[in-house]
Image (cartoon, rainbow, N blue to C red; front, side, top):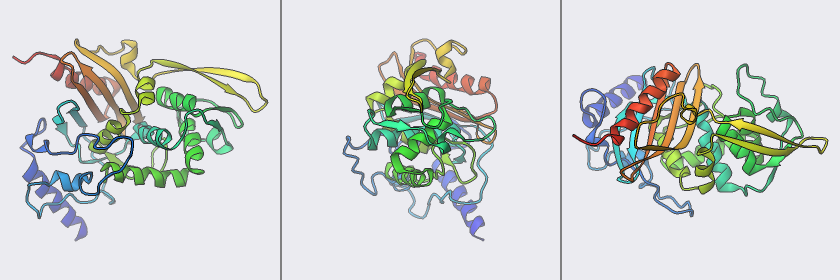
Amino acid sequence: MKRNKRILGTAALFCALFSAGCGRSADLDSLPLVYTGSKSFEYYDVGNDRNADFLLGRAAEVSIPSLETEDEPSQEYAYGLYCISENKVLEESRILEKIYPASTTKLMTALLALKYCNLSESVTFSYNASHIGVYGAVLCGFEEGDTLSLGDLLSAMLICSGNDAGIAIAEHVSGSVEAFAELMNQEAKRLGAVDTHFTNPHGLHDINHYTTAYDMYLILNELIHYNKFVSTISQSSCTVEYTDAKGNAKSKIFESTNLFFYGTFEVPEGIEIIGGKTGTTNAAGCCLILYFRAQNGSSYIAEVFHAPTYEALYGKMVELMKSVSLPEK
């Protein structure tokens, strides 16, 4: 019965708020698109509650059901295009549906590191961080006892998407992955990302680790107010200096997972890609969320989740960017 009520609630919501089919929906114009505070991080309960703002001026009986359920995430594309400069949702499809975020999770990990720590702090890799043991997991390759600055570790995590870096950051910030996951969920709620639940700092698959495309937009939109984050994601590679457990000075070079940086996929004319975050698991599919500017001077965030292939992922992202780079006819 409870499940039936959720289904009916969801159906009522989309009947009321969306026109038939996918694409742009004028009814999304009141979504809270903009960072509302400065670095004070003082959030107000209603103004940053996505459910409240989404229903503002609409039928009071319509509600967005919680996604903390046993329901499986959507197996279809979820994508969105947001104009930050004009506070508009330009295009969307399934941005409120439950998805697995894969390594885009690391955006929240980065946010908490930037919010709570000094980037000059030293981080030493624990046994736990250096021994993930998950087949196919992308690793930076640091060993137990290796020490480097939090700023360099953050760069390595964002650029090469090392899962071991995510654990090391989590342990540095909160003492354990479990405590850090609690902090991630608290921060998500403060941002209005109310349909998100994190269990780890890296995005390796967990059935209880999920979000929505819209919630991921909120997280990235918060991050772009940090200069360190923006400068990091704009790099195609980085060199990290560190000290091993024996005190030897060493370095590693990491290359970006963003294929736009290598010309693998062509960036539309008039678009300047600043950067973003990729993510891929079998359950999540191929994912990418980008921050970019167009020649009209406006800034945008575009996102594609659960694409079946990299070609489909980048193809859809190019399509979204072209929609703002081409002059109106």
